[in-house]
Amino acid sequence: MPKEKKRQGLYFPTTVERTRVIRTKADDATDEATQTVTKVTEKDGVYTVSVELKRCTGTDTQQYEVSPKGVALLTGPDSDSSTRMPMLRLDVKVGESWKTDVVKWTHTVGKEVEVEVTAGKYKALGWSRSGRFRWARS
Picture 1: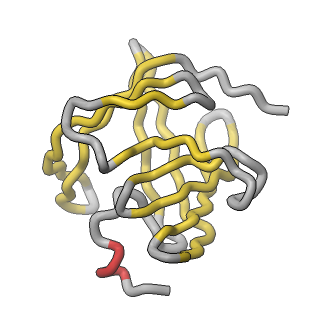
Picture 2 (picture 1 turned 120 degrees about the horizontal axis):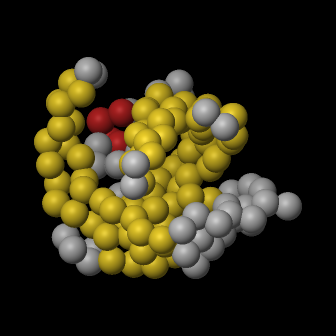
């Protein structure tokens, strides 16, 4: 596995056991979830990252494709047959948007800002999403 310093610039954890907390606000509701990296594979600078997602409604497993181009949620049963749903694209400029087809969302990139949390100071990329989440599971 490449050393951590070669992973700089990726906006998603790519180290097993790394955990991140996600707080989402919509109208008056706030949701908090944690994602813990459980498995990472790398091929040609593209990482397939498996995470355990814990939230108030239960625990789920997700896979993401992470590269210097951005982050995509893989929505199929495995990374070889998955549909890519771009969650973060780094090839767009501040203020530009893109739409996802799997879930009807519009994503917009904001400016990079420095944030300070308990774990330290980090650079964060502003990002917003609009639309409704209507995920059909079989």
